[in-house]
Length: 176
Image (cartoon, rainbow, N blue to C red):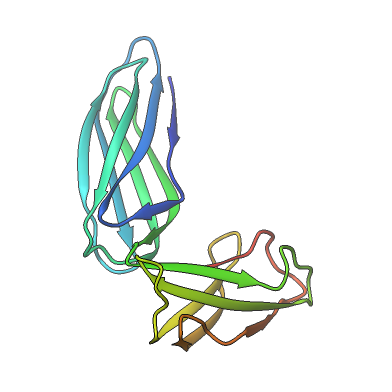
């Protein structure tokens, strides 16, 4: 008995997100397939799907616009002939704004200083005149390694933020 699950890393609120489930077994049935996405806040939802053996199944994960955005975990469980539980790190986001992150380099080494500027527009690509946002920097293990709270936005731009990288940093850090 085996299975494969393909999930997106980014889950969009107010949208249908697809998860691919393939159960490769000749004699068992997964009676219930449940996916549950939860964020740091106590919020979750469940959807059950029946997946036959040897079948590839797309599961639609519809996330309400009220679902909290940010880092979360997608927990996928199967019960019946094939029992499993998979946990995947995800980022839940919305599309009310278009946010572009500019960095001073495409790659960094330990002890480099990362320079970040954020461009923020509405869904029609018109710059946000005034506002503020939080810039969070995560490492490859989704551990928060840096944060800039209350960053002001003026005419769609933030000031340049500088973040010094440590000597020991997990590879593939990204900005959220």
